[in-house]
Length: 377
Length: 196
Image (tube, rainbow over all chains, first blue to last red):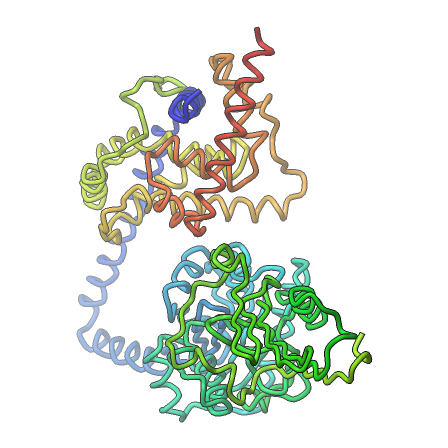
């Protein structure tokens, strides 16, 4: 049976079972039209009667309406930015009524379109957006870090809102059985440089602030390189994580570590490397492992001395696959399945400037494991 | 009163829609031309209903969503901006309405996914072959497989366009489509053997 036969069968079966609601649709559309038409004459009559009553009253009414509009005009009180990879801006008034939900990048467009934003309250809007992020696969079991940035002129309100939203999103993700990493921060209104940076790279000011802090601590990173990286990966690049908060989040009340579930642990990486070198921990000295960002990938760089030869092996931190094996005598041994592994790698590309980052001083996760011979395992 | 079912002819086919024609209908609907809405309905109802059924697996809910989709098209046509994807626009409305329906369903524990047998009962005119096909599609495929296969079969949209509507990566759509077609083929062939 060909594919086309199956499609034909499906089409035929659905065609035979589709109910006819056209009459009801047309009837309801006509009702809609009548309702909207009925509203207009009433408005006109009311307006005509106002004219008839007194030109002064009309002018007074217009003036009053003008004043009313001016005072009650929706004024943005707080800005909330949600970043996963989609970057979303929510503006709310002082009563937390949502004035606008704006997509700051293309991914965010999809999220907003798919979200039910009928309820104009901030809490409900955030809930719907998180739902949409989950439904669209941006928040999954292994990649569920979300950055919440809050901007309000009142610093107390700023922190209060930040804490509440962080708790709300954490609870929401937990309810969906996702072990979450919700990182939050507050922003100040007057940081024009940060806002310009965010606009330039189509990210939120919150994400721009996080990226800026990473770039400041490691000259190998550039804003351009990091702008399209998801929050989960950016958090992995923070220096001295998870013991100390990064500079971008120094004022945050909640700063859990970035989600680690998507990476293999360092012990597994070491075992893979030693197995590949056909040795074991007892036979090597000066064993050291670091997790770093290198050639567009998060890798474990494992160094050790074997038979007086310095060896260096890179293991993909996601997949546990050997990427590079090099010995100090100049021998460069490509892993046999290297080409086959490429499909599993992230395809996001960094400019070459970042590609050599691993060999220089880096600020990524430090997982040094000094090993005197025989003591490691 | 029209017939409870639309005639199962090829003229009623929902596949390979002329986007220009659908755009033209929507333009006329924006001018409150109800005959254009009827034309649009006749050209797209199979796709809209099938997609809703694939998401909801409940014929009553799918019928409600189909009704609401055309009402929404009628009320939103003035804001429609043609990007050459009128069917994708309509199906996105359907998808959003289905999601709202699913949320409602979550709140009402007593509303459940109906059995395919109930669907057959409602439509006694379904042939044995139709029943086998619908059974295989609605009961044996997972949510995304069912939606992808339905959209592909009923709309003639390309995998890329389906990926956009369902907000899934293209590679996912392709792999799920292939898996779903294999499942369908096996099930239909097995059912046919059993029938004999």
